[in-house]
Length: 72
Length: 149
Image 1 (cartoon, one colour):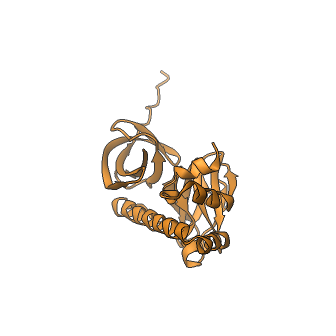
Image 2: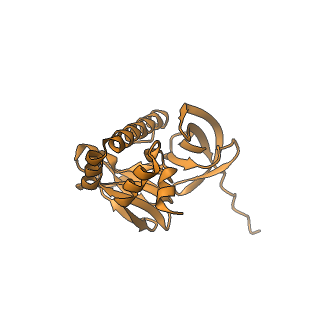
Image 3: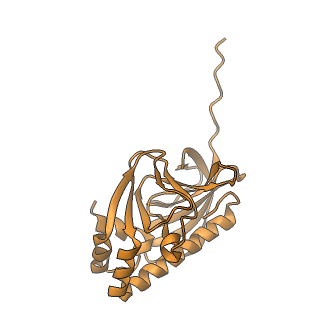
């Protein structure tokens, strides 16, 4: 099975993407969309499966950026 | 992996027989791009559609004041450039690679239409899949306020 996934970034500040995955995305998984990485927060079927393909919609949120370390 | 196997995993080719996949493979030409390389530019004439087999591309739109912004990212298995192939208009957006070694297979409109006329079953299946792809992109756009296709 191949999963065609529509990824939408919550908040709308960053464009989402569409790509094929060999495994169904799971909540909590990390995915790279374009130049950034995101965490999957929700996954559901967008249209019924056809042939060897499932069609999914996933909502993602940006990964938190590491806080700068204080040097003293 | 051989191209015929790669295309078998692409929704555009869903439903094609091995012989039909081989015919489509014969008119597909591999191109590779590194990060920030432009594959084509908005408003330029277009005579090819592309299937992404590795990496990701960024769809960019002019904002009318000389700048442009990303509206969508497409990854493995996705199709782009099909609008100019269908309506023979200019490119509706620019497309830029966002990963080194981004690999696409290009299909010329003239080769594709000749194949569809030669084997109308291929034409029906691929055109149906292309319509489904555009439908999926519209559904994505409905869910993503920042998207454009």
